[in-house]
Length: 247
Length: 309
Image (tube, rainbow over the protein chains, first blue to last red):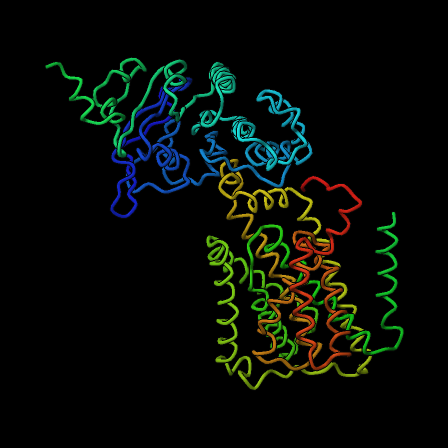
């Protein structure tokens, strides 16, 4: 059964169509890569699904229920998590409180105190335990990305959108993050990975969706998508394709 | 321990102030309590939530007129003040729900416009408010001037106690946690499940109710109100300055800031009548420049910072 279903989803900003008639389904338990050049509408698509901005037209279904008019906090309660490409920690809070906030406001039955306790094992998982008492504003970029991930995990998501969690990380950090993502997937969390690093996409995604100028231009296995002329054109341009033609 | 002693001493001082027989002291005490209510209320939305409201005077004026009109109709003062609070909370909830989708300067300007709007309404609704002629609120029969002043002192003091209790509860509860999230990154807060519209509206309504009640007491205290007096922009500015003095984001800070400001203003006003505004203005500039976190930050020099909240 598909967990998330998009039906002709569009979003216009004035004259610009940022997301143009996108229809697709995401199966529960899969790791799906969402790629495309800068400005292709990847983040906008996530914003539409999570209710950050309203759809211009189309339908979104989550476990068969319509969610195209929900607010972001409601998405969190349903189990839809996302990280922000530009990390947005609660700067003046320490690391524990950042994660505790996610536990407290997304799941019923917690007090601030019990939420802090529940936050500790999550910090352990992402490797932030030693920084638990540090202010979030004091973290390095790599650590802030981990904190974003910890907050997303803390809401006990059914599906999580990871918006460039690897951008700006070194290769060892990327390796760690990839392992963690695969581990989350084994626990049954559906993952949509927005990523520029093809190495990561090729190695952990079972399926890749490609957006270009708001339109869905390719959808398939990582290998097939990487060879798809539409994708090569999206990234490298028409002239590159023409230049490669024999003769 | 020393904190409790200090609060205890303050309580004793406040309770006995009217017994000193000094009407001037009682008037000053009432004024300090009134401003403390307003500063602590502003701190809820401006300090804890990070939405710089300039609408304090709007709720003060609405409260003053509601209670004044009710008193004139013969309603007992406590009921009139409750009525003022009720209208205050309803209006604040409606206005908050509409305006709190604006941020920063836009929100500030919009709330400022509400004050102007309410003043013009009070000016125009002559049948109800007396318009520019003002509204006379009858004195209480059979009470001496000083007795009456003492009663208003205790009433304002009680209102401050309730306000402080509610604000401290909000600051330390799950609500305060949500407000801290909203202040620091509203998008992130929503994404982890904080219903920001709900919390912001709730807190804006709370910040309106006690200000309206303070306005209600004020009207009966001074017996005469007019639109320019109770919708005065200074009633919006002063609580903000007081919260800045005490340290934005802290209820205790806002209350201390109000007491410090009222005392300071009075001392300057009494001794340097000609350039009192200038001195107060320069002091505020100095405070913002050199002590941006308010008097509360002085404490940090010898005490480690507590984690929020």
